[in-house]
Image 1 (cartoon, rainbow, N blue to C red):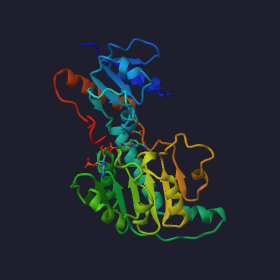
Image 2: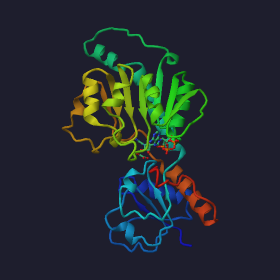
Image 3: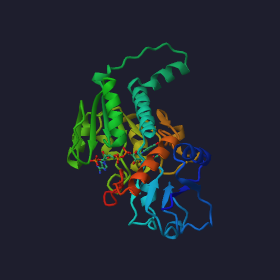
Image 4: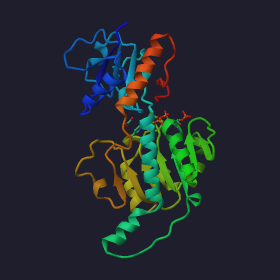
Length: 311
Ligand code: NDP
Ligand code: OXD
């Protein structure tokens, strides 16, 4: 069987991916996609999104590997083959990077760094107090690959951690909530709310006015999942009324965030450019090549997206 893996990435990291596969998985015939080439016999591809007409042209596909942990963009394409397994990205460096981001931002909001910024801007020596981590509750929406790893790290730091997922979970020292019925109870004590949900029809727009109103007054919101989770105007209103004191957003409905977007100038709203975590080509090449080897040996694939659930 041909082991061609077509890379449909179209980003400035093409060279890193080529080098990673050459170093880690030389048995894979890794090729960068070129417009107009014959793709009818390609068995494997690694994609973030494909140009119009490309999916139907790939008639021999056996596995589609998603370049990201989130597959909402791929699933939104009605031409994506429905009968080919879609494997999302799960790799140790992507998880480590997200844990680092969540810890960094939770500590930032826990210590209310904006108070220091305000004091420094007028050369004022103004020591402010903050609770111990065990008196601070962090709520994580989504207790999957990334949310569970982030929760574990926050627990290690001594925070009170609670998580919300679709199905019940049992994680050491994490108070778990699940389903729509338990969302209000989960939110009621979440002083720092972290969103690590996949974007699905059920979760689109979940970070909205009704949700912000259920948080403790002066809460912080961190969205590292997808821009589509957030109703932007609702966050602006919640921050204007101080119901939400501060926020960090890594993801946006429109990316790059337009230069004239009001978020750039919103006080206590911190922006990172969708780089909370980044897939590592070497670690990903290793994961993908081992999945291909297992698949060819007749073994099952891991991290296959459930098309019904949308993640
Ligand atoms: P997983 O699929 O492993 O986890 C998803 C979690 O969300 C699960 O716990 C799932 O519940 C829960 N969930 C899904 N739908 C609902 C719902 N309707 N109500 C309650 N809980 C729900 O995903 P990952 O942890 O790997 O990734 C999460 C997201 O992070 C990705 O989809 C992507 O959008 C984003 N991401 C962002 C990056 C960035 O740089 N900003 C980098 C990587 C990912 P259950 O466990 O019960 O199924
Ligand atoms: C992802 C991302 O989903 O980088 O992996 O956003």
